[in-house]
Every structure is written in structure tokens, then in C-alpha cells.
Amino acid sequence: MLPSVLREERQFRLLFAGQALSVIGDRITAVVLPFAVLSIGGSTTDVGIIAAAGFLPFIVLGLIGGVIADRFERRRIMVISDLLRLATQLTAGVLLVSGHAEVWHLAALTALFGAADSFFAPAMGGLMPQTIDQPHHLQPANALRSMAMSTGSIIGPAVAGVLVAVAGEGTALIVDAGTFLVSVVCLLALRPRVAERADAPEAFIADLRGGWREVRARTWVWSFLLAMVVYHAIVLPSIYVLGPVLFEDELNGATSWAVVSIAFGLGSIVADLLLLKWRPRFALRTAAIGLGIASCQAVIVGSGLPVLAIAGIEFFSAIGVSGFFTLWETSLQEHIPEASISRVTSYDYAASAGMIPLGVVVAGPVSDAVGIHETLAAMTVLGILAAVACLAVPAVRNLPRGTGRDTAPPAPAAP
Image (cartoon, rainbow, N blue to C red; front, side, top):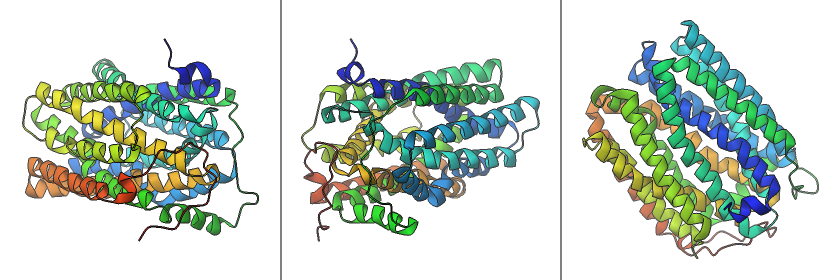
């Protein structure tokens, strides 16, 4: 039986359908791209540079994307972004298939992909609540969106492994390009609720400052964002750079990495199913605990255990990852006014995806200097310390549940 949010929220159903397939394509690329770089003679540092190229645009463009998404129709922004990302993936795939791909080609195309994503992500953060008519459906909708990502983490790596074995990395990227076309079709059919917006947009810089005021005035927002900076800049490079490199050197490469990715996806689905029904009284407190569990990913990948043991432990760490992301996004949607939700979401992405490049560029050289296993262990220690510090903030621990579509001005920041 379908969850009530899918039965009763038609517009969300359309959005969910398009994004579910697109996520599978993204997960194909996440598995394939590092090995595509290595297949054309790239080094560990090259893998890090290309991973950084995909996230670096968030630092420059993410906040701009938030202002634009709060000013203009979010659906149209997402369609344009999808078309641009379709073009970049198709071009990269053709270059690889034809044997003409070079490292700089993949870096440039990945950067263009990230630039388009910098506008898509804040628009998606604002559009998703517009597809929900009943506020109590916000958390289940976020859980289903997370489940789509989790399912993609299972199907995507499996498809990626088959495509790489049968047709090569280039074909896998071409398949990803096709998923963006499906997303465009679903978005064009979407008729979201009209968003509440400011009566008259201010000058661009004033709008940008307005988003920062929403963040700064809420202690729970900026405290959690700081913890996310540590997680994304320090812990996640273990997944984007060091994990694939370690598995290539010691654990049978892409096939073993796909096994771990699938186990992680299964654990995420367990968390998502739980959050379809369970509504924790203090959502952000639960999210901070999940963040601590999520930070264990790095040490697990570098544990030296057999592949199946790593996969089994990653299953449990995935529960923390999905829980923290779903409950954090739900908290934002429950407490941030619709007129500024995309701008606040853009700060979220700047503190998360925008920080990944700093880590992925440094991860390779640091691991070369001190050892890859030692680097992975240190990543987890720092991530857990950040999560504990976040949980120690009263505004994080004690944030109540909201009703969604909050239009009240932010309260003064706590001392």
C-alpha cells in the first residue's frame, strides 16, 4: 500500500517520480566517475580534483542560486538545470566512449555539472514544500525523497557495475544523461502550489543578506551548519576520494566498492521506512545523533576488514546518515518562512556540498603523507567531535517540532 503522502499529494507524486530515476543516474556517476578518471591514466590527486570540481561551484554560485530561487519560479530553474546537466553527462560519455577523454575534459564538464546543480538544489529545497498541501506530510515526503536516494544507492552501483563491465564508463554516463530527460518531463507536468514570497524583492545584495539574517538569527541553524561543514569537508572525502582509491589498490576495485554502496543503500532504506511513521519529538536532537553515527563511515572504510564486513557495518552507519539528513531538512521546512527557504537552503548547500572540495583536494596529499588508513581514522574522530559539540547546543537539543509554512520573523539569536 502506498504511503499516504503519495496517495494524497499528487504534485509531490509527480516530483518524486522524476527525481527517483534521476537519483539512480547520479549514483551511477558517483561510482563510475572515479574509475573513469583512473581508466584514462589519472592519479589519486586527479580523482580528488575532479570530485572537487563538481562541488566547488556551490561556494561561488550556491548562495546566488538561493536568491534566484526565492525570486523566480523554482520549477523553471530546475528544468533549465536538468537540461544543462543532461548535456554535460552526454558530452563526457561520448568523449570516454570515443577514446578522446582527458582528465581536464572531465574536470571541466564536472564543474559545469556542479554549476547547474548549484541552482537546482536551492530551487528543489524551496519547491518540495510547495508540492505538499498538508504540513504533517513534510517528514514522510522527505523520508520518501531520502528513500529514493537510498534505493538509487543500491540500483545505481549495481547498474554501474554491469555497465562498466559490459560497455565501459562512457556508456554509464550516457545512461545518466537520459535520466535527466525523464526529470524534465515530470517537472513540466508539475503544478505546484504558489509559494509565499516577499511583497517586493529587494536589491540582490539585500536579498542575500536577508537569507543570512534568517540563518544568523537561529542558533540551531548555524550551529548545525558548522557541524555539517566538518562532516562534508572532512568525513565525506573518504567516500568520494579515498574509499575508491583504497578499494582499487586493496579490495578488487569498482565491484567491491559497489557491494559496500549497495549495503549502505539498504541501511538507508531501513531508516527511511522508520521515518515514514516515527516522528521524534525533538527532530534536530535526533539528527545530531545521526550525524555522529554518519561520521563513522571513514574509519569503517579504512578498517582493513574484508569487503563483506565493511559492507555490513556500513549498513548501520547509513541509518545515521539518512536520519540526520531527513530530520534536518524537515526542521528547516517546518521553521523557515517559505519566502526565504531557498536562500537558507543555499547556505545549507554551501556548508555541505560547497565544503567538499576543500576536503577532496587535500585528502589525497594527506593520505600520501601519513597513510590512507590513518587518514580515514582521523576523519571519523574529527567528525564525531563536531557532532558532539553540535548536540551540546541547547537550541539544537530542544528545538520543538514546527507545523510548516512558518511566516513569523526569526527570534533574536540566543547568547
